[in-house]
Length: 186
Image 1 (cartoon, rainbow, N blue to C red):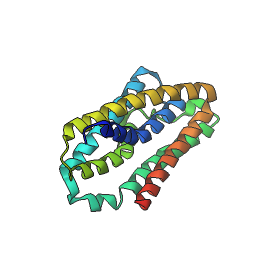
Image 2: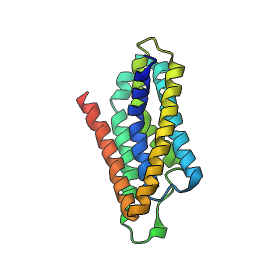
Image 3: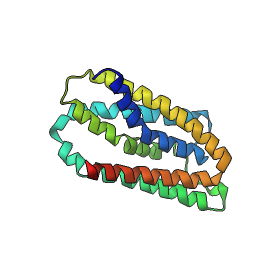
């Protein structure tokens, strides 16, 4: 599996993280180079670690985790998205919520957007692949794509102001809904 298909898998896994990073930057709550680095680094790190974790655990607990992982991801994204919408609709721009590129919020966003990578790791445990190379590829592709998406988010935020924060919150909730719907379908 170590060919262009790994890159395609990595790109597919990175899409949720890209949407979240673009929304956070467009909302104007994750400003500056350090926030850009934190978003790119953490999303890439978690996307790379989760397949490793899934591969290590293998199929032993996949049924237990699969029963609720999508609801957990949805809940985290819905809560953070709801906060972003509320803050975007607030008249007081100084009363904005916390920077989503810091602390527990960043960790929860990183976890919520990388749960599908955990499932990929479970599947990789069933085939003979160089898991370290696959995980590193996923991490690097995610970090680069998140960086590009966050920079695009900057442009959207500059153009649309606080409306971008509302849109960012809606995007987070829609990503959570997509996770739940995809789980229900498959």
